[in-house]
Image (tube, rainbow, N blue to C red; front, side, top):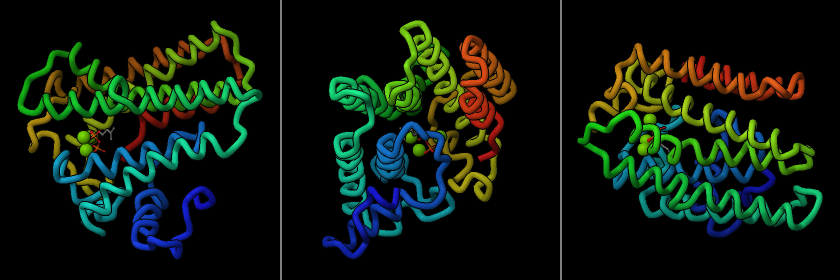
Length: 259
Ligand code: IPE
Ligand code: MG
Ligand code: MG
Ligand code: MG
């Protein structure tokens, strides 16, 4: 990440310092499929925390980007990280051929866009104060969080994994299930975790009247659901044997994490 981010002494220095502030240190680094995914993720959090969205002051145990710098800088940090993600996909040779690499660009673009993460964020914001059904919640979560997690698995698979269509389908199913599990756990932790452990303000969803799995089905059932999703995700990897060890560890981490 340090290599792909502009040095802090390059002009405009304040923006470049803020970029590094938003990306380096902390974070789960689940998205090992690539720095590009991590940059999109970091951008989405900087914008998610802005006063016009979730209005949060704490992220990864530090003041959020707009609190540490200012709102216009945080907006530009998001813009610049978004661009940088696609620059990374273009700058480095990631796949065996150019056609596959172009597919990777399109895959991440679609996942971050209005039919993926940005669309999920729109649903999240327009759902404030509403009681969503479980089906509606699932639709929101699959977009706002699931799309990028799914893209990171599929991007990884295109970096010369040699997976066939059936295996790609199973990997996609795995990613969809853990993507959903990730946000179910995020909702549970928001309700049950402490600000100190989470590194972000706990209890914020209920305070903001956000519809979550906790508000829809309660904490206990949401926890069970996360475990069911984890089991189904692990089942989807059954045919992979030892090759999927890392993916199984990620599934466990996502569901068992405390932050
Ligand atoms: C944010 O969801 C999802 C994206 C940034 C795309 P949340 O709003 O629930 O995330 P936290 O709880 O602020 O981390
Ligand atoms: Mg949000
Ligand atoms: Mg938020
Ligand atoms: Mg949350």
